[in-house]
Length: 152
Image 1 (tube, helix red, strand yellow):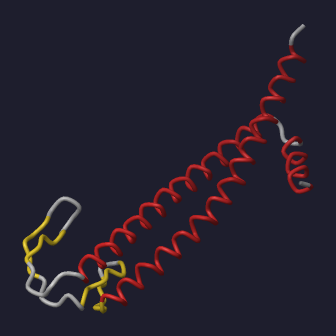
Image 2 (image 1 turned 90 degrees about the horizontal axis):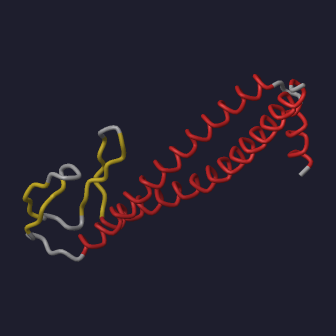
């Protein structure tokens, strides 16, 4: 609480133009954090879907005909030749051959990592949101104060 009070005191020392600049900067940082949160949630969801697909794949026999996703909306006909071996996209166009349990473990580790980062970003975003609200309150007060002092 003492830190928050000192932040408010420091903010209160700024003039209206400086407060506007700080407000814009904090809102911009908050927007970037919110975009990052959305991206992390999207990535975690993709890994969760991949993990479920691996579980489903593990139940399929060799020789099974299926549709293989090439993109989000384009599929090609394929045949499952070895249900025990998969290719894992590890980023930047690199793939690693893994067993189904190793692939599932990879997905679970990524999900855990993304959720931990998500939780940290939520804390930072909450702090930025509080700062943005404090700056807005001080700015409003200073603007009201300046209009009351200039009125006859």
